[in-house]
Length: 394
Ligand SMILES: C[S@@+](CC[C@H](N)C(=O)[O-])C[C@H]1O[C@@H](n2cnc3c(N)ncnc32)[C@H](O)[C@@H]1O
Ligand code: SF4
Image (tube, rainbow, N blue to C red; front, side, top):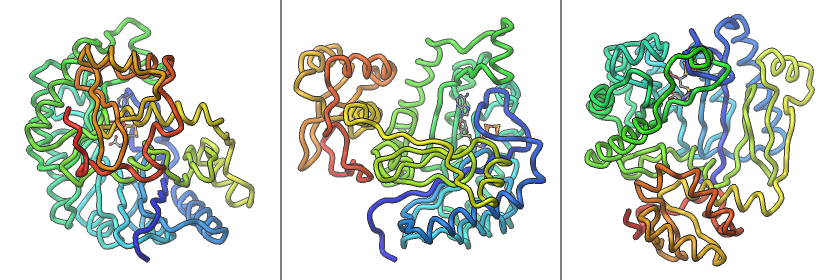
């Protein structure tokens, strides 16, 4: 089937070998006995959705949790149940600890073409502070195995601003990640979630991440990645040309996708919806032939425009700001926080500068207050404008 209108399938795998201290995702460490039934439920959910007209997927994303905790046959069973366009992007999030040559080879043969490793840091004491179980040698081993299995597209996730991480530690992680030869990096500021081990430690008086150090770490990452040929395309994401994650671009441009599995979200027909949160409830709903969808909402046009604007402003392709906000746009441009640019065949767009990206939330709020959001403030759903066509310099 040829590549058509972008449509994504997200599959949530809610199992991990151990819980990292900072992580508040919907994942469990004591429910491996459910994995087989969970995989079957995902396959049934997909079969039912296909029977009622699920579009052909142009991207599939296995996220978690730790999708690589599944046996290769289990993940392949789910993937085989998804009708995909030729050239569809298929990403699997992997923990460096839970991959081996046989598993990665099976993924590749099944049609997976992109791996995203949760690396977080290349420095042992920082990994230990985060409660991670792998070490930098495991990361190198995992990426080598991926290359041997034929994966050209490999991404890593990094976290910056862990208390105790020095600027030199962060530089070592940046250098270490680039030395892996990856074409895509996601880097996130460590966020303290209250219901995590880290959240409880901080509540009890342990040091929290320092805002200024996190800002420095972000700027350093942006400089190092850009020098290595990985340009930012979303505030927390950098890639070589053509290597942006198409599935995530779908989220950021208001595209359509279904969520399979517990706690997964979908966006179809103008409605956002989400599934029941736990694997038990998901399995029970699917095997009882009742909906796994726990709730849904339709955004009114104003909320949708604001959301589109906010997401678009996080991207290098930028957002279209409504005329009412012209004075604020000029003021922020004069302060060096945003630039005006133009994409071929498109109107004027505003794009955050590096310094602007550090203040993205505040700037978005200011612009929204000034009436910047308009229905045309984002690219057409599911069609991110091509950066290759862009003339924006920032
Ligand atoms: C749900 S995890 C899946 C990846 C995989 N389970 C792993 O960690 O190896 C996706 C990414 O979210 C990021 N993340 C999760 N919790 C975070 C937090 N509290 N602060 C910053 N980044 C976080 C991590 O970089 C992680 O790799
Ligand atoms: S960060 Fe990844 S491996 Fe760690 S608990 Fe969260 S989902 Fe699991």
